Length: 172
Ligand code: OFO
Image (cartoon, rainbow, N blue to C red; front, side, top):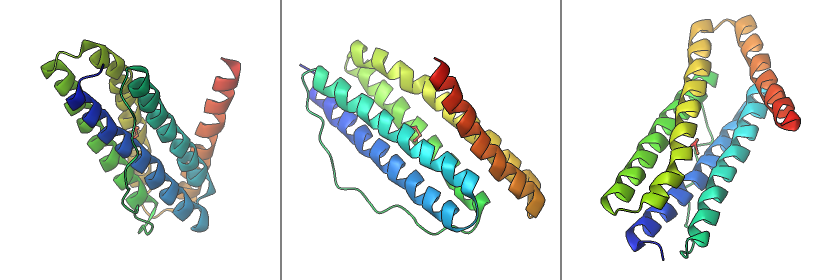
C-alpha cells in the first residue's frame, strides 16, 4: 500500500499535469487563430505529452495500490499578447512543474518511499529536456523581436520539430 502522504502528493501532480495539458491546448488554440500554425502544431503536440505525463502518474498510483483522483481545474489563460508572451509563459510553467516534481521527490525521500523516488527519476530527466527545449525556443523568439520574416521562419521550425519527432517515434 502506498504511503497516504505520497498518494495525496501524486494526486496533486496528476492535477498539475492535466492543467498543463489544458494550458498548452489553450495556447495552441490562440496560436492557430493568430497566424502561427507551426507553433499551434507544436503546442497541440505538447498537449498530448502532458496527457501522457498525467497517465503515467495515474497508472503508477493505481498499480501501487493507491487511487488516482481527478480534481476541479482552473480555467487556463486564453489571451496572449504575442508569441513571445506565449513561450515566456510556457517557460515559467515548466519551471513551476520542475519545482513541483523536485518537491515530490523530496517527500519520497522524507517518507522513505524509494520506489516512488525511483519512478520520479523519469520525470526529473524529462523536466531537464522540457526546460532546455522551451528555453531554446524562447531565446530564438526573443532574438527575432518584431521581424516578421524571422517569426515566420521560427513558426516553420516549430512545425518541423514536431514532424521530425513523429518520424523518430515511427522509426523506433
Ligand atoms: Fe509535464 O512537463 Fe511540461 O508541464
